[in-house]
Figure 1 (cartoon, helix red, strand yellow):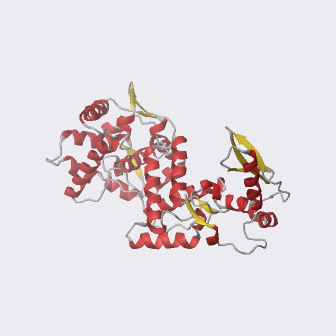
Figure 2 (cartoon, rainbow, N blue to C red):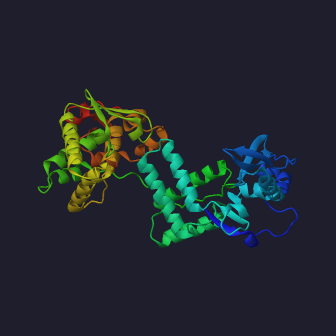
Length: 414
């Protein structure tokens, strides 16, 4: 928390001030229905010490702020209560700005100060709450990184109420000069919006500023064609374990971490809800061809955990991502490991033409997420995946599927 003396307080006019209790009563469009008949603060004793209770109503909801009087003497408590009553309107005003009065008996300087919740402290409170709500550590880590970029632009000690449309525009411009991609900037802005909604619901701010996203060119997902994938599989410098692993991910659509956090029950890989992006338990039914590869992946992970001091999954799975990136560079393509999952989705839709089935197999919660895979032209997919289709007399249409291909015999579900 940061504090400043009241002679630095921006409001000096004693008439009805913006944000004061009287002002809030008159401006119900912003503050809702706030009762004007505010009772004087009263005393309350807790664990032998006295507190001043400042109470009011907003939209028929009872609100209360307790000010510690830091004394066991009731006589002293009454004297300090009188000082609190003089500042009752301001206490309510500060409450809606996420700030507090720091009375003379509450600080070493013996003067009246205003203490406010800094941007950094508010972020810490928000992330602690998210963790208690069961949000994945990886998500919280990304949230922290996003908010760190904003503190690098605005500073750590600003008030949350100082975040306006203008400051958000400034952030966007600065991040662009730092060569952040529009997609990355939008991820950070969505994180900020979630944070500000949290602050609004807890009365730290009176409204959430409008957040304008950066325009992003709409592009289709990247996938790996049969030809390019075959070139990767031919690399002599690629260990057979990685070749089998890349085949596994391409033919099952698993996310990178799922084979290591899932539990194998028969031929079904069960992903616990805590590790699933949709926060629901996910099941992936595997073909017998994939089981030995999965078991090998899991055994390698368990063996690695016993050898290292910090057995974080991220460090282990990054080995597969980096190796795949290296192989793509060798064969002359610019692809990410996650593109193996996109490849699975494109191939499955090409084979089934059932978007709802592909949605289920991918573990998507909404079909609109899966529909992006339907945007590719048939002619392009036929050229990139000739092992899946045969052309009939009409080259614009897909003919019957080659059901003799080994990977089409797999039963997929999520």
